[in-house]
Picture 1 (tube, rainbow, N blue to C red):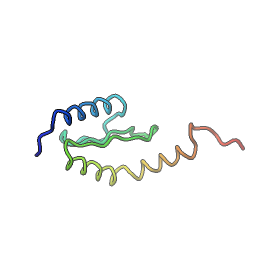
Picture 2: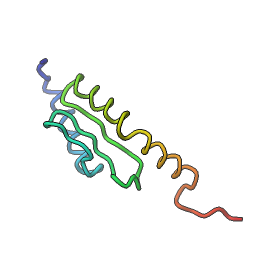
Picture 3: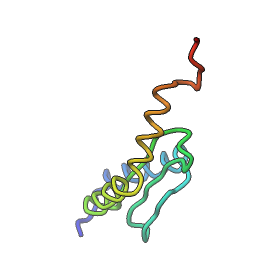
Picture 4: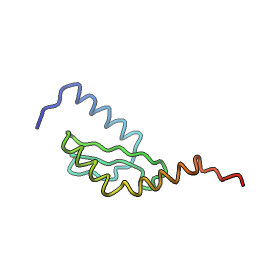
Length: 90
């Protein structure tokens, strides 16, 4: 495995802090190697997908695509069709 530079470790730290503060809960964590964070109810359709290195990030993205993307897209499309939860003025 490649060693991270100081700059890469700092970026990793900032990303972790941001994800912990802004995107919760952890939907999936695997051996502290990769994480998928998103609202399980998808009230806010956003996700954080990351791994400890390039290989585990690729695995995390693949898992998201297989397990979460269809539901994520459904909820995202629904929120776009009715932004802000406003009713149609008929």
